[in-house]
Amino acid sequence: MDDAGTYLYAVTRDEGSALPEDLKGVAGEGVRAITHAGLVAYVSTVPLDRFGEEPLRRSMEDLDWLGETARAHHRVVEAVARTTPTAPVRLVTVYSGEDQIRELLDRRRDDFTETLGRIADRQEWGVKAYVDPAAPPPAEAGEKGASATSPGLAYLKKRQASLRSREESWRQAAARGELIHDALKSVAVASQRHRAQDPQLSGRAEWMVLNGAYLVDLDRSAEFARVVDGLRGEGIDVELTGPWAPYSFAAFAETPERPEGGTGDDD
Image (spheres, rainbow, N blue to C red):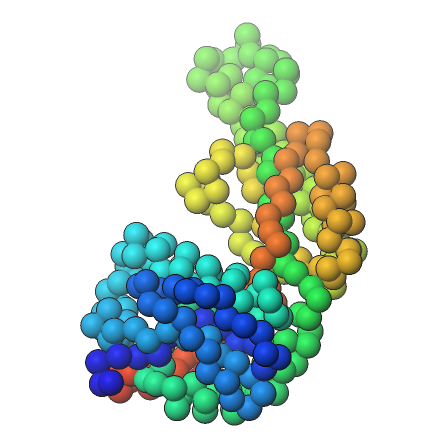
C-alpha cells in the first residue's frame, strides 16, 4: 500500500520463538514477524499520514505523542526480549515496506549476529545515584572580621565562602559517583555512563552524580543487586532499575530510505 510504511522495533535470531499473542505496538497496530537470513524482524504496518517523513517531523515535537509512542515501542521490545536475545532498533524507524526490511537483514546480518551473541544470557540494569546538595555554610563563613567591615562586604565574604563550600561538595559528590561506577563495572561485562538528567526529568532535587547502564550476566544479577545495596547510605541514594532489554548495548541507529522518497545514510 502506498499510504503505509513498515515500523521496525527489534531484531532477533530465528530460533522459533513465538510472538506474544495480540501484541500491539505504536498507534495500536498489531505486531508481526518477518523472517529472513536467519534473523527475525518485528514490525508493524503504520499509516504514513502519521509516520511519514513530514508528519513525523511535526509529531516528534509533541511530547505527549512522543511519550505514548516510546512506551508502545518499548513494550514490544520488552515482550520480545523476554523470550530471546533482542537487538532493539531506534525509536520511530520506518521503512517503505517488507522488501526494505529484508534488505536490511541481508546487509546488516553480521552486525546483528555479533550483537545478539554478545548480549545472549545478559540483561541491562540501570543505576542512578543522587546526593543531597543542601549543606550548611561553614560556621566561620563571613564571620571572621565581619564586625570590622561594612555589612555589604561581610555579606559578600559569606556568599563567596558558601559558593566555595558548594563547589567542594559537588567535587566530593562527583568523586563518589565515580567510585560507585567503578564498583558496578567490576560486576558487569560492559557499562555506559549517560548524561545526568535534569531535575525536571528525574523528579528529584538532589544532584544526580551517576546515570549508568550495566550489562550483567544472568547468573550475576543477584550479586549486582547486592553491590548496589551496599553502596547506599552516608548521604547518597542509589536507585536500581531493570532488568531491561539491552538498549544501551544493542540498539541499532538505522536511518532508512523514507517511505515518502527521502534518503538517509546509515553507515
